Length: 439
Image (cartoon, one colour):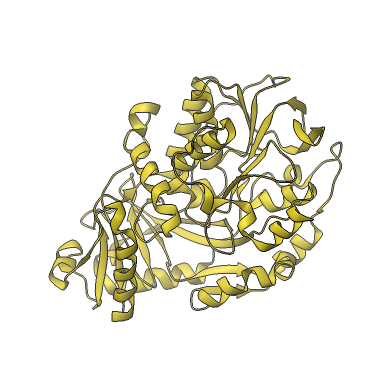
């Protein structure tokens, strides 16, 4: 039962040309399209399925700066600024509330880890702080499980993915972005080595630049162009409850559960310490690239070999521009959630906060997260095809930092000084891409 997403009308006529084509209608794609249009460029956004149909509507709905990789903190702060004015600028309800987020610490070692992060984050004056036991009890009344401490950020919060991303897309369309959905992009054409057109299932759109914001599909798309993009898919599972009163407004995550209040009065609940990494052919192709990440996350990553290995083995990795592509054969990734992980998360949450015993499950869903080896996104122009930009690999952080990422991508495409330092997000930080670019 995937989330019920607000609908966004599609344009019926496809322009023959545009200055920029954005490929992908998730939070990164629609944010990029909106900011590009606000710079005065003509923009077409192509989405193979439904706007926000995949991970952009299936995430937890957290909007946080706390705990992020230091490279992402400036981008997260810019996103927070945009989120604060988003309902005013879009004229729509996004569900954004700065209700605070708690990270609960099982051990003193966890506390020490967050103390170290606080030192790294101190120059940004985020306002994160460690809570005493008394302060934690006040934030989570009825807490039955003992924790060594908690990291708290009052300015962090939540929003509703199935409402916020369509609101961004609708705002972009009102400002003049052409939205084509469903309309799969098959590839690109070049002239003199530089991108000159994007080829869709409906025909070609001449353009000077394109931004690939394809989420979990980005590696496959790039592979057909000869670009080896380091990325794997991670299965995340989420359940939602029916509305219930008397439970916390803030969002919180422990090692074995996470929750946040929904706009409808229910809760999204997940397992913060358990994600599924399906073993697929790409797992072996990128084994050494992802090995350090696997070692670091061994306690939280659950490897699984199942039918997805065969499914991905059968997916074509090469195609011509006049052929039906995998993006047309599968319009939306809709994986089954891991029921065992969700049951475990709910049990752990109810033991810690017995008030959730009365919460009734209303549904659940799975989503495929686009992950990079260092869990930091890629936002860069490709060396192989000038004019082709990539914004992908957000590793589960894309919803919260999506608006800021869209602004940064607009800066990169238009050649403006970037709103934040883009160096940490370059594609050539990965050795394999550096070798190819030098070859």
